[in-house]
Image (cartoon, rainbow, N blue to C red; front, side, top):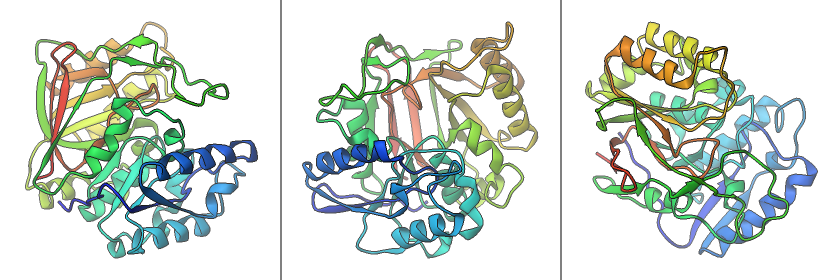
Length: 336
């Protein structure tokens, strides 16, 4: 594994939109995020793709890919953080040149996890599943969200700890009234385990289930090669978050992943909170129990991952050890 490093001050963040861009009324979100990032002793370089959005994409495929390629190969840019996710990141995969990329962080979630997972699988460069750029636009950063700086500043061979949040936001709502904090963290956080297995270790890998599932069977989703050549056969600790897919869709997707061999050598599964629809009486607990019954592996759920903020920063390829222990629940990530 190759681990990027992002220092604490004077670093340059590149912002490009490989999936969705921003509509005109959203431009102020980027402007506010730039102010807050610069207030924390970093500089920002904005790409052109972020300012437009049509046909569920920020720009035509080649333009999106070219800008991401340029930022990932530019030695003067220390990390790349897209503004947010979207729908069509998968379009650009054939146009990317990951073998030429600098070892630098690519951070994001939702549809961006399509790129994160494929980049790590293809190159062995660690990628970070965590806040998108527009989520950095409030004056105050809660402890969970702000951990991305500690994680990305961890040296190769080092470790970093993140704890469960105190509270989370149940629904994705507009923050037009909010300046100091864009999140309304009102619900009590509780990380949960499906059974008595409350601790699990493995090499972290995953992302947004609705988007990364489309890597199955493609050259961009070769989990077997990655596990063999980059991880020396170590077990994978899969983490998933669900935005909108209903419980039946998720059940089918997990079956497909299992049939494709993605879970052949796994240590367990981590799921973020979700408010997505339940089909008939197929609850999320039934989905998790079915997965555990089929694989014999532990399932931990309602974690700080995904579309019910705040969220952890998880590193694809690093070793993660998660412990469910009430308010002291934590995950330790080691860059080995």
